[in-house]
Amino acid sequence: MSDRRTEPRIRTLDLVRDLATLDQALYEAVTVTKTPTLDTALRRLSAAADHSKLSFAVAAALALRGGRSRRAAALGVAAVGVASAGANLLGKRLVRRPRPHRAVDSPFPGRHVPMPDSASFPSGHTASAVAFAAAVGPAFPVAAVPLGLLACAVGYSRVHTGVHYPGDVVAGALLGTGSAALVLAAATRLDG
Image (cartoon, rainbow, N blue to C red; front, side, top):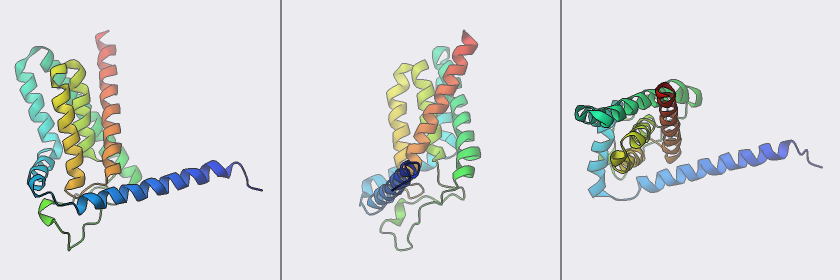
């Protein structure tokens, strides 16, 4: 007779194991897929997103326009700050997931960016890019789709360049969405 209290925990462990297996398989599928046209562009995009440089450049352009776009820029920068703190000060320190292993004989070493020293989970690049897009979009709707697509591309670039598993990117996107929601809710309370 099984203990009913342990059954949900066993199912949860099985689910976690299955998700980790899927995460590894997706990562490996990307690493062996030949995409020479994308390699250089995604490597450059990944590097441009280092330290949220891309988001800050867009924020500067929006701020120069004034009006609603200036407010959107401020919300986006605030969301990047929350997401970055959440990813780097909490997520990476709590989970400490090792970065993906890149084989010395990798079939496409030209697509790689330097391997960061920090933990892999969650993707800080993705968290910040999604936070920026999700905070700017409601305040300046014309930018929502382009920034959302850019955030998705930044997230994928982190897997493509070999520094994150897909699960790290998904977690970063969730963190970024939550960070933007917090910033937007705080701004609404301050305005109201």
